[in-house]
Image (cartoon, rainbow, N blue to C red):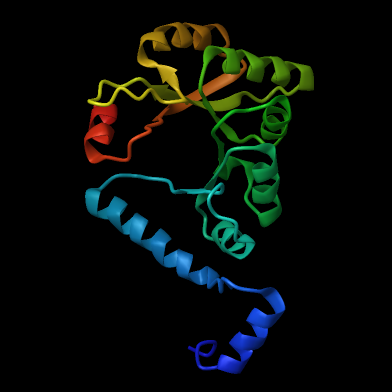
Length: 200
């Protein structure tokens, strides 16, 4: 209200920084966090919130979320560095997307959880872990893809369902180096039907 009632301030700010001008109110994000937790409570389920860093560029929102206890989803080493600098501890960071060696190395050093998209990626994570001399097991989620849907579009991320049994055998082999905390999935469609089929 104070900002909107000060047109001279707004005009001078736009003159200084250009237009469009984004005015960020970081604490507003906490209402969204509260609403998500309310849904979990109403459904009587436990849930964790992971804020996606890629589409969100505001450092002030990121710092506010770091203090709120939620997690953050990062898709590159640069995003991981941003999350750490904002105050997120490694145990509240998950890695998605393509992972180069730098991203994997930094993630292992900070004990984040990796969404594993292929057997090749799993082997790379283990190889880098051993080269670093890290004794703590790396936490992973197996990210699934290839669910039966009406769409012919295949996901760019995730392990096809028909390859999961081979990956589980790998996990048995690498049980000293890897802790599988659970499953996740990637959908190219945001529709409810696709989500229900994936959960099923």
